[in-house]
Amino acid sequence: MKRREFACALAATGLALGGVPAAQAQASFAEGKDYVKLATPAPTSAQGKIEVVEFFWYGCPHCNAFEPLLDAWSKKVPDYVAFRRVPVGFTALHETHARLFYALEALQQVEAMHRKVFAAMHQQRKRLDKEADIVAFMTENGVDGAKFTEAFKSFGVATKVRQAKALTDAYKIDGVPSMGIQGRYFTSGALAGSNERALATTEYLIGLARKSG
Image (tube, rainbow, N blue to C red; front, side):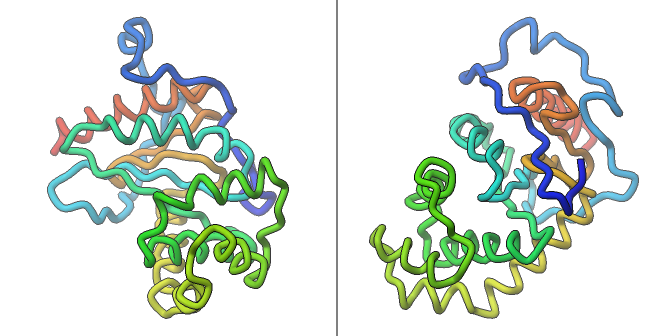
């Protein structure tokens, strides 16, 4: 699983939403098998809440398959959990797509466009590798092209891309999608064995983080 080879670690399998099945909930989760505990904690930004981060890349087919499952799961997390997505920046192409995400965030268009970007790349086979193609796609989908371009090139977006890379490095992420929990742990389908178990492991780690304070 090499980050420089665009590794996508999480297997695209199903997730039973609305709660983890009883057998799964009672299963044990082992450090080094289902998840990794960081030797040096990564920074967190959620004050007074347990922070959960999904590391992703728009170009990753497994991230695309995982997204609807994760989206449904994220809408059901407790109030004491703060969930956010962080795009990785392994290469120049990853950074371009990270800028795309943060430009949408700056324009408050993530909810409207996030899934459409995945669909464009993976269902419609659009190449959104260059700024001009990205801006054209945004315009076609009702986003103001001039405002998007301004955000895409802005200092604020560039800063967020750098911060995302730093957090990816702090968590030692080398494949996507992966889940980071409270700066202390990370898990993925490659570690846990499936999407379902990765999210069950995430819930277990949220509990651990909450108990330890």
